[in-house]
Amino acid sequence: MRFILASASPRRREILENISLDFEIIADESEEIMIEGEKPYDTVKRLAMQKAKNIAAGIESGENTIVIGADTVVSIDGNILGKPNDEIEAKDMLLTLSGRINTVYTGLAVIETQSGKEVSDFVSTGVKFRNLSEKEIENYIRSGEPMDKAGAYGIQKIGGLFVESINGDYFNVVGLPLCRLGEILSEEFGINLI
Image 1 (cartoon, rainbow, N blue to C red):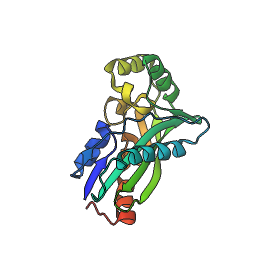
Image 2 (cartoon, one colour):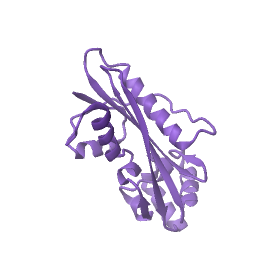
Image 3 (cartoon, rainbow, N blue to C red):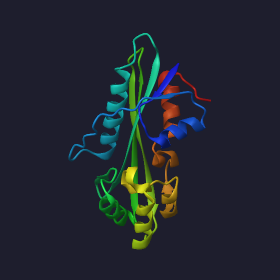
């Protein structure tokens, strides 16, 4: 069985490498379009499936492949926070998150190319930030870490210093809810990773 991760995210790659899954990366480069008023969990499921379908469409017939798509957003006050466009936007996001709970949503999409079977789901995790000082935010932005991450933070590195607690799946906050992915592969496709 061939596995493809339809994402260029180094964090998702590392999660799958850590469980010794033999997989390839073929990143989907299509534009991620946000739909105003769409619920965060619908957004991540739609974008994850878009990524998986785009890559699955390029797989030669006869070659049974599992394509895994994922998309992650941060939500607070009903607003979706994607990746910041610049340092000013990153600062605004971090000020909004300071001292509050945000919700991280990751959509998962799994496609088996031979059968055409498609399964999608999402996982949500609550993340409580401690109160942040402006100096901490400025120093964090100077590190460069927030610039390629939904909500302008990464829990697995320096941004973890801001996280007081989480309610849910840690790997979901990193960008790939590993437990749910394992369940989908096992229950829906008969593939056990352990």
